[in-house]
Amino acid sequence: NAGVTQTPKFQVLKTGQSMTLQCAQDMNHEYMSWYRQDPGMGLRLIHYSVGAGITDQGEVPNGYNVSRSTTEDFPLRLLSAAPSQTSVYFCASSRTGSLNQPQHFGDGTRLSIL
Amino acid sequence: RKEVEQDPGPFNVPEGATVAFNCTYSNSASQSFFWYRQDCRKEPKLLMSVYSSGNEDGRFTAQLNRASQYISLLIRDSKLSDSATYLCVVIRNSGNTPLVFGKGTRLSVIA
Image (cartoon, rainbow over all chains, first blue to last red; front, side, top):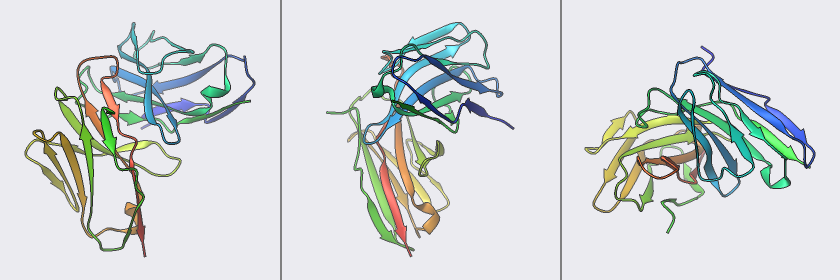
């Protein structure tokens, strides 16, 4: 069982570069989300999706775009990387549209912006 | 006041000790509550849900106090493997952040 798969696991970018963090789940989960985790800040929601074709902004959406063209995939795009986006990024999914379901997290992507 | 607050710790306890963490929340409309565990440099994993009547899973007991707006996690007979950061999660079906994570409480169990 793959669960939630994030790629890449590590990435170093230069300021101004763009890239896409991939997230895929094979559990047919409707709800997917992206978080960033910084020391002393906890997990902060970037964007989330309650189903294919539907996305919404979370707490810290600026500088990031998402799309949800399929149930399985929820990529996160950094449009023009900035050092403030250095962080650990987690993708999560849960069953159905109810938020009372446990969140399944990917292993995380450690991103450094120079 | 932050919506979800936890004592960051660290809590350093000897093996076999009982330790308790609290998590307070400010939004009275919050509907569901969970405890997650996160090991160093790993992803968070669900530890247990928190039910209104309180619930137990082995050495772990979770309780909810809606009147005072806090949830608690009690760990009995602590093991070295319990060392981790414990995150509380509050769910509300409003606003742009339906799930709110606390910053976590770090526990170190010492031999």
